[in-house]
Length: 500
Ligand code: C2O
Ligand code: CU
Ligand code: CU
Image (cartoon, rainbow, N blue to C red; front, side, top):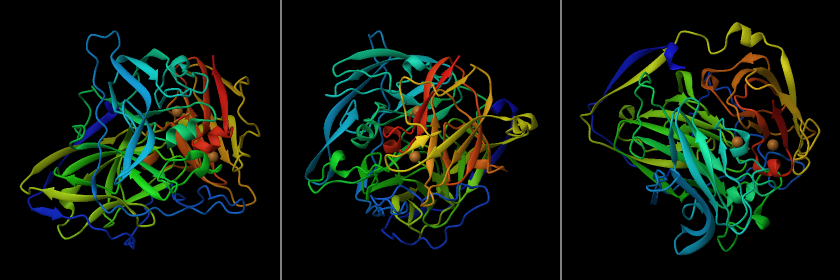
């Protein structure tokens, strides 16, 4: 998309010494402002409730981070030497010390919890050996990657305990923040809950790309936001703790770290935010109300970067943002907070002062959608409905032996996704499609804001809302589409499309 974009240089000077210490002021959230461009305004409301059939809105609050632990940064997955594959990812059991002196049983990829970050250059192919060292079946799904359905790792791609396979992943799509996780039918929620998730980055090799921070772990930081409920023994006892309508916890973890803090030493930081929770919606903002810049959606850079003060991500959605810490004054404590003012990630800002930094932003000449695209007729209707274990898509529950929809390879169609309200008012469903990155045309007939003008693979659909999206599948095969509240997915809020 960058070929049509004109680069504008913006030079940022910062000459003051800054030092803001993180502190614990949860609840200080008086000046959250919504902006015209962030039109996902329902975030945080209408989430999956805790058990009560009568009420969707009962969401347990998270606890503010006390900033006790340095944020863990998932390591980059290292390339294999002397092997006939490039990378290896092993799903395995382990233990994690979330709480001092307590060992919690967890799952992880190549480790105890979460997984290493797999980085693939745009346009390149890599062979990845995937191994299941768990004592139950799993799959390896590359969420957002437009791969052939045989290696997509959907529910029909089970790998049995002790088995391995080599898959070839091709990054034939723009640079983006994607992720990987298991997708075994009726076990996805539990396996993710126990810790299986990792980041998958497509790295741009396009020299025309704007210069945005890209030193992984230094000024380019992945942030996996999750909430967890622990039992009285501090275990992730899913069968006891789970909620059919989406399991919600009161403990916030970021990259698996409880009570995290991050020390900032570079003025401009790029964060890749992933809502990796089973069900919770997050509306992120900065504790001092400052704006930040969103540069990417799920599957690509935005058509144009956009200044925002809050950002909502439903489960499985991603966004990349830039925060310019040189603009934030010394006295303030600073954190990423949610819409309740809970400090999810406090920052310790330790800039040395005399830095001069330049970053380039881009603008676009062509509209995100052509007139022709906007006027295309709706070809497919998707109706999301229900709650708890009575969730359906177009009135049906998942059946691995049934094809629900068909679409021709490479042919673009408009899908209208309707979130039909129930008696209790309904709830947000994040709708996700495998094998494609789509464009959002409209919400209830209204054009979407700048922060949704980028490729996406998951879309937050508010209760009663109709969202039109423009969908093209580059590969043939059978893919699933589903609600990304993982318990809804496991309860059958999923269908299959055949691309011919
Ligand atoms: Cu994130 Cu069907 O998956
Ligand atoms: Cu997916
Ligand atoms: Cu749902």
